[in-house]
Length: 296
Image (cartoon, rainbow, N blue to C red):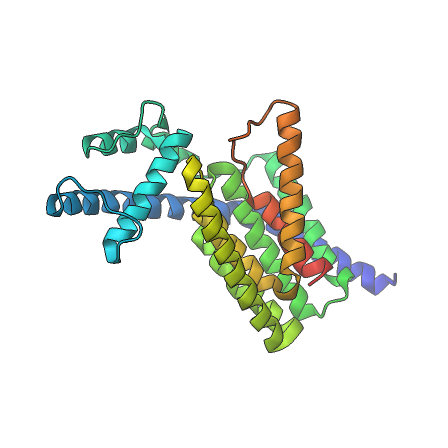
């Protein structure tokens, strides 16, 4: 490797380390705050819509299959029941549902609204900044090593920073913000267009449609046992499918193989139960790496 190549590699690594140490924590904190405010507003708006629905149709609850706002409230209600079974509702929201006549059980709430608000923030400690800096330095340095043109490498650097922010949010508050998914869709789509042209975009669109269909079927099955695939996970997987195009299947296989291995290891050491969920964003980042850098 020539001196010029080493200098380029060092510049990418330094920029990546700075992004990981300073930009990613700030972005994650901002996105978590926005996600909490959006979730809080939407949740209580749906509760008001539920009250209006029950006033109009006494003795009935809205179903997901209904059209318009009633179907949206039915979807929200199913999500509330799923959260209640997992015990992840806040005390205030669980009580509001009980007052509205919705039975969510005794163990449905895990924290207060104030605790949830604090959870939806991120103030990075020194070791967290160091980990993020190292991860981003490796990701940024991998782009010139891959031999991709500089403009494609820059797009992948942005995708990596966005995905890292999503990982922080998911580990912190079990949420992958909408903004992360939208950025992955746009920037990943631009990468796919530059790398594979219109054929890559078409394959990405087909892959995204398949992912949505699989998630829809999975939710139909999972909800019978009180589980579900999170909306954030679905949005992120759809964006990754669009970004990875022809390599989507391999990226998804790497993602779920690593997630299964982690879950099995957790159960073997009795840290996870069969019904316990895990944050998926760390494994979705493997999808991004395999689907773009290695095989994209």
